[in-house]
Structure formats: structure tokens, C-alpha cells
Image (cartoon, rainbow, N blue to C red; front, side, top):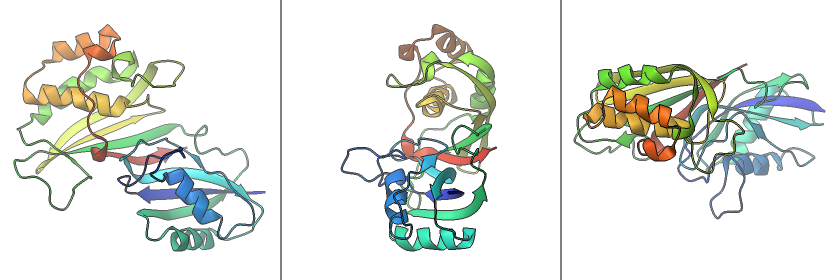
Length: 246
């Protein structure tokens, strides 16, 4: 068997998320597996680096699959992209890897970006690709409060109630928030994240940017270890899975 690693870009709007589910909407995983069935001799399973939720996008999702068919990485990309049309999914890279490589379990660090459009006017060109917040936000205060979350913490306050992780303890390596024109860009990295962790963190820090919460309130929320103590969950459309480091 040959193991292929692929890099995938997608607009998550029309999908139920990465993972194949018994729902009306298609999944990213299912769409890739369906495309592969047209040019591979056996049914393959796609193993992804991150299980993005419905509506979440990706610039650099990583997946791997095994097949007996020998193809060049270029041929793999071309075949996938031919059969994925007209879905908003593109395979932008491919390489042959060793059998001990696993898209999920071999990952050392994952990078996410959350994009907020902070202006009065609604988006015309980026509908479903940013969180539109019309009230002014103070990005410097948001960034200052974000540093509270760096390092190892119990993130119970910022995990979804349906999160299946065995432990709420995670180590956040990076959380930078910067204003770029009308945009506020939140950049995060960690080995792994809890379900909805990024969106819950950003939703909480939006309250800081509005002046509704102060830094002490954020500390208290983290220490409470109670989801009810945290801020709202930011919408999925502003979140992007950027890349994976192996």
C-alpha cells in the first residue's frame, strides 16, 4: 500500500464539517472519499489533521489515505480536483509519505486564524468568510487579554459541552490579535485544540474589545472552569484552519 499526504483548501459553508455524518449536507471527508472512488481501485478512508466544524474554512487542512494504485503526486492532485468540481474544495498539494505518518496523530502543531470584519458596513465580497462586528473593537486590549491564555491551562470554560476530549488541559503556544485595516486577525497555534475552543476564546475577547469585559473578568472566567462563565461562541464563518506542522 502507498500512503499519500494531501493538502486541502476549502470553503466550509455548504458542508456539515470535516467528518462524514448522517446529515443532508455533505462533509469534506465524504466528498474527498467520493472523488477518490472515481480514480482509485479500492474504497479509501481519509484521515484528517483537524475535524473542522460546519462552516469553518481551511487553507491548509492535511489528510492521508492508503491505496494500491501508484500515481505521481501531480496525478493525485489533478484527479482529485477533476472529480471535486464544482464543490469548493481543492487539493493544493500531495506527497508520498511513510506508513508511520498519520495526518492527525503525527501533528506537532496546528495553526488557526480567526478573521473579524470590524466596520459599520456589512461584507459584500466576504459573506460567510468573516465575522462581521459593526461596533468598534479595541484590538490592543483584546491582544493584551489574549496573553492570559498562553501556556498550559484547564480550558473547561472554553470547550463545547459536546467536546469528546479526555482532558480539558491544553497548551496554547500563540495567541496574537492584530488590527489590519478594517480587519482584526486572531492567530492561534497549539498541538491540539478542544471542540469550539478557538471560537469560544474569540467570542470572549470580543467582549473585551467592546469594553464590556475587562482583563480581570477574563482571568476569572478561565479559573471558573465552567462554560457558563465564558463569553459567547464566535460564529464558524470567521475561522480558518491555516496549516499543520509535523
